[in-house]
Image (cartoon, rainbow, N blue to C red; front, side, top):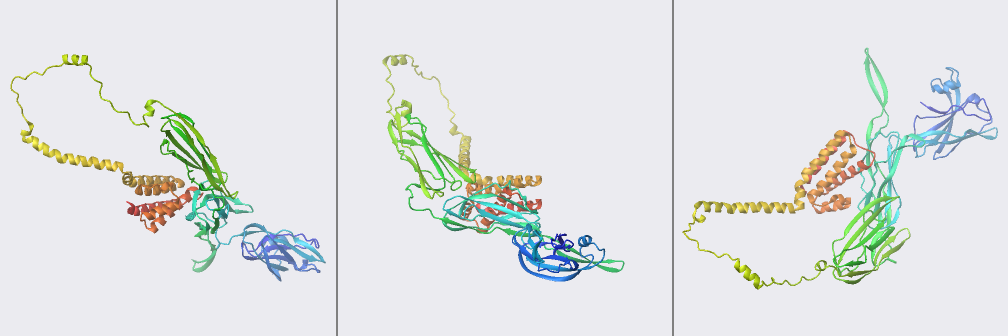
Amino acid sequence: MKRFLLFFLSLVAFVSARPSLQVDTERIEAGKTFHLQLIMPIQELPENRGVPQLNAHNGFTLLGLDSADQVIRPGMEDMFEAFFGGGSRAYKARVYSFNVRAPKKTGQIDVGQITWEIDGEVQTISSRIPVNVQKSYSDDAITVSLTPSKKSIYEGEQFSVTLGFHTYEHFEGGLQATDMNTGNDFIVHRSDLANMEFKPVEGARREMQASAKFAWLSPTKSGNLQIPPFKFKYNKRGEPKVVEEKKQMGGMSFTSRSVRQESIEDEATSPIININVKPLPTEGKPANFSGMVGDYKFTADFDRTQLKVGEALTLAINIKGDGTPGTITDPKLPDFSDFRSVPPENNISKKITGNKVVTTKDIKVFLYPKKKGTFEIPEISYSWFNPSKKKYETAVAGPWTINVEKGDNAAEAIFQSPAAVTGPVAVQKQEIESLGSDIRFIHAVTGKAYSNAPHRNILFWILFAAAIPFYFIVSAIITSRRKYNNDAALVRKSKANKMLKEKFANARAALQKGEGKAFFAALENGLIDYLSNLTNLEFKGMTRTQMKQELEALGVKPETIAAIDSWLEKCAFVRFAPVSATTEEQAQMLKEVEKLCEGLGILK
């Protein structure tokens, strides 16, 4: 059935004319051709006329114009017949058919305007022709975009990528990530996409779109790097198909025809992103360059400059910057040979501020002076490359003068040689006399002393012989238990299966409650914790690239490593994105992850 766009167009030259516009298809598809038809009753055609013109814009392309006289019959279009009247009377009309190609974009779009030269004057037949352009059923029902904040950066510089989705009329849901790997050339901090919201597209109410910051990345080397395509699977409505069915009724055969559209699974990918990474300049590079690239702040100071021997002196260092997410190198510290030191305390944190991930590192160095005196602590400097200014910057703290006074004897004795140990104080003569008067003399024992020596009894030797192996058995048990308790790796391995079962139990509980994000969180944490417990490595704090390298070093098969990486990718995406899987799909995923963990016996 043809669809009317405009039922009445007011012509300046002739009021009685009643033209109409229609398209020859029910669905205008992006990038494909259609015919826009201007229908004029023969009796309404002016005598002095030219050829109607279509001034196409907004991406529409006019390919040609044909015209023909046609008989408009009743039933061709009920709305056309009701408007022009005439009951069942047919009439002749001149049909001008504009062959037009639609643009690639979709939505409610204005084709352009139609003008017509009548009696030597150009008249506007239609100043605006809005049509609804839709995606073809053979095209993707969703487009995925990954947009970087910069395409040309310095090595180590931070940039962000925005993940975007645009769904079309034939999208039917079931969106799941199958590959969201950013490659091995970047350090990545992922964003929480749980609040990503799909909103209707302006001018196309059946289309939805959403976008959010997906991650912040920092390249680990220079050159032309690529972020590979992200891949997703989803369901869409397929092409309309005419289905014929034969039926028997009362000995007669009937054939019915219907149009059906089945739901099919498809895959969408984002385009490859090319990033040009420039090496850092060598000109002006400080000797103590930290390797950090971004905008940084550096402070360092002692909590006091006056103290006594035995007291503690604390050096507090703070470094903050928007370079590589989660990474800050330490500054070069002065020589503290005049002080006794303990391992410093390090605290590193990340926070999204504005459009960047800001990493903060706090370092506390505890120093104990070994002796009294005045000590000069030289300045501490920290250098980085600022890409926005395209130059190296250096911050300096200090120098400091530390005055140490003599402390208490007990405190000083900690750092000095112990005094010689003297013998006991001599006993005075009066004490000897007093002691002598208090002595109780030993008197001879009268009578006969009888002795039942135990070694003369056979039972003694039986018990003695039995005690020797018992002693060795108990000693072996105690030694084995101590060795087991002192071997953290062995303890973790022994508890790996038990902890994995607890995680899977949490996943099943979340599955029964319909809590999709809790289900995938339990799967992800269970898999990572299981790997950590089996290998005594902290995989939770590693990047995906580091995890692959560690698993390769442990001799895990490449296909197993790929499966682990794929599952972690799926779990991370579903946790952070506003999409989920069905209950049946989640149950199948749980079985597959359990089977994957059973195959990790090589690590035991």
